[in-house]
Image (cartoon, rainbow, N blue to C red; front, side, top):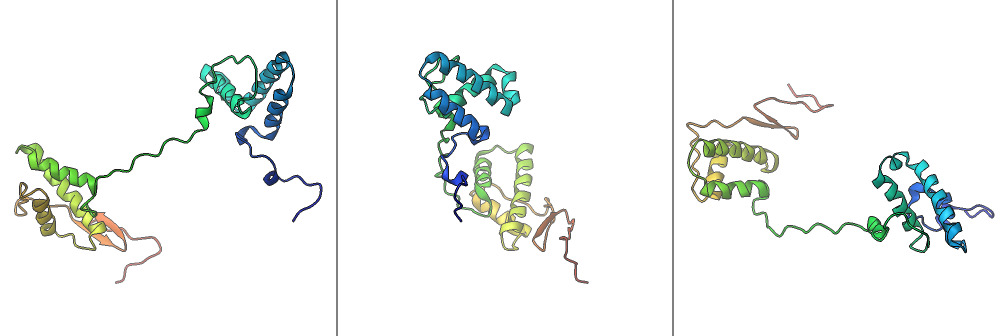
Length: 208
């Protein structure tokens, strides 16, 4: 619907920093149009004071005040010729998007265990024997069992954990299930519990 006389935001120029509002942007545009440097300087100081009312905490620190001048430079699109109280040469970088993080090229072979457990398997291959290694083996084995309960389609018995642990450490770890008892893991209605603590999902009753 197009009603004559109405001014829609969708038809206006896109604001560079919408948090300050369109009126502040108009003040910046007006300052740019002033012929004398003295007038532009006066306008700029007034605009920064108006901007500070939008962000009161910005004036509490020197960095906050500097940020206001950086924002003024951005809204002026570099066309506001004044005596800047701060170096605004880096102001444009504020609006730049950060570079995307590089995607890891490491291929996860064991998707149900994940990359971190793969690193643990490699660590166990060269780790010297001792209590520290035994404790780490116990922690890794229990995490493997939890991962199997979540992603292994219900196959989470201790024998499977022992077999996988030996396979993926090239036989350097042989889990003795006669002397080591792993934590009990129960999977019910999509909820995985440790140590046999069964949790009931809200809205669902157990069948008797």
